[in-house]
Image (cartoon, rainbow, N blue to C red; front, side, top):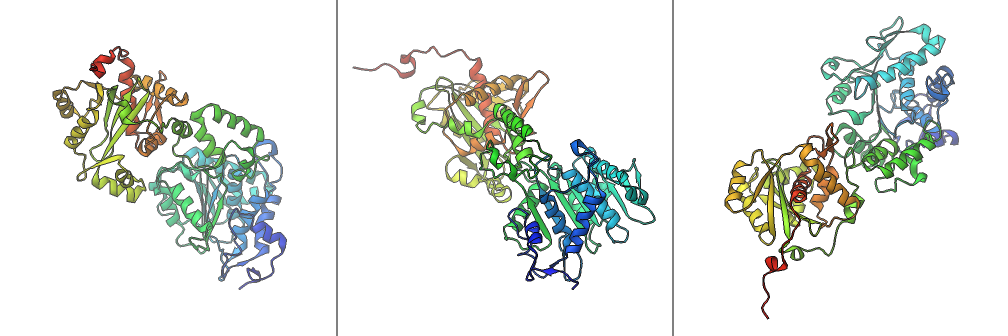
Length: 545
């Protein structure tokens, strides 16, 4: 073992403080047989501050003085060594809010790897969610290289392929496009993936990870802001990083760097913003954050973007439509179906898929209340609860969902239950999607129910979607607080056409929204129907004295 500092040795307080600057993670306590080499760490820190400059913004042209949190990442990555004198850390996730200087940091790591590493035939690649984002790292690295005469003398760049090479060697850096097919056959020594949350699937990431297999001390760096709740490479990597951070998984080669505001925190509290923004007041303007926060408070559709991009908070969906706090405030704990008995209502039936959730919504306009019943194939419920962690089975056990036999929706079963559900009420009309429901429509008509074919277009659904939003925001809606509908509401992403008509989009929404779609249809029919003018005697009958 080369000369260095082991975790059992006396480590200078300055180094110990720096290395342990990683949030909620102790690299010293988890080092096992690894040792820390201060000279290697100092070498890369000096490279940043003596050889590199900032290339944009107010600091453009000034030396690249690393902030403490950046020094901690760099020192840990390059200072820790294994017993065989190779680097300890082979992979890191830097999970941090936007505008905290991650692109210059990545560009600096690229140049250090290209010009200072001793790896023969060093190959460094950066990738991102799209070509423009990937080329951004290249542009920073190129500008930094050209600003330092020694680096400019030793390197050449090729604009078309977004490549920088080290002269008289086989070492190169290249910014990659998102085309997976062209990435096979790479022999990478360092991979840097920017904005991991923008990767649509794991294909590119998996391909790049396998490309380092033959290298002696490869390094893979993932840097990203938060994703929303969905199966994704970003969330998978974050889950792994948190388990390493918490000691659930012991992985001496993985460095978890997680800057985030907890999901249950008050995101409007300025005091917690540094938890996701270590560069607050440096590259992240406090005034900008205050202005963005004010906008998020006033514009609900911007709220999730502010939480994810600037506070690194995971959100339920990409773009917030309905604030769940306002949705929950509409829960009327005293509302009962008995209270609604005999009331005029309009129904919306959404038959989304023969293998997934179906929903019947009853809208009672005179009471401003609704009730929704759900159906799901039995096999689907157990499969999705196991694979996607959606508690369908639990909801079924609690009575919010009816499970139909087998693995496809039983429309006869659903029709019979629909007839039983609407019986106590004065059903004016049933709205149903005109596609794939012809037989069911005919059967309902035979039962004496007035059926309306409801087109699933923005023009038709726009007005009732806006009305539902208005009712929630004004706290004028009454519902039973069932968790399935709350979940559907949390998943909704809107589609807006060129005329400004918005509707819940099944294509853009991350998860199921069938209950909300059924409710919008029911509200839509209620909006165009004449107001009730029935006498109490027509609804209740005569009383005998």
